[in-house]
Length: 265
Image (tube, rainbow, N blue to C red):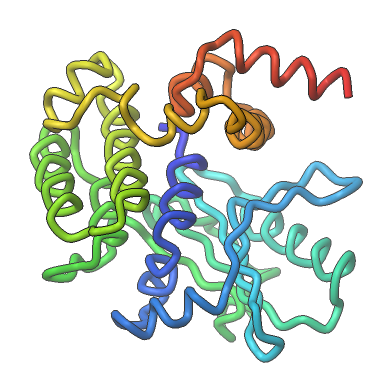
């Protein structure tokens, strides 16, 4: 599963989920999320791109750097710190920070963490393991969607249907409701790649994807610029044009036009 776009959308749509993950409870997590701006940052003059950065809106709060790891990579902590210190050098060398690595499982964490032990022991860098996260009863929607990612193929559809029904029942804001439903659809599309989009929509009992807000905004006259920015961001994460077109819900030709224009620029 290509996880970067999933987690970016999850924390962009429901930023309090990140702070719930850190152990901050309920309303306090929402209040903390409101004090940050969540971005994927590409650093100038380097090949570094973060999975996500929570930029504080107040000077006394730390930066949070997030890395999501679903395969073994011995350099993950070094990669995280390279991004942290590049950012500090380019912006504010005195800024306090925290690093968070979300591993799919503990087995993916590097065996030798000697160079980073002091930062790990001090809590400056914190690893989390998706498959070990305790599942809270009546968990907020963001966490419930996070739990969905770790479900098996056989479990996921029924749980996703319940989540879609819950979103429709609990979320009054139409834009946020559509974002969350589309995110749930995206998780299932990744997990059940052998099924067509139409089969998955029938499975989840949701309307045709071309009626959703993302597609309408992308294709509406005057709003293609928003879709173009999304396409450029996904392309920077090495996603193929066909996958980008499917996720953004635009024609493949439009994706090629955007990427061609970017390369010419």
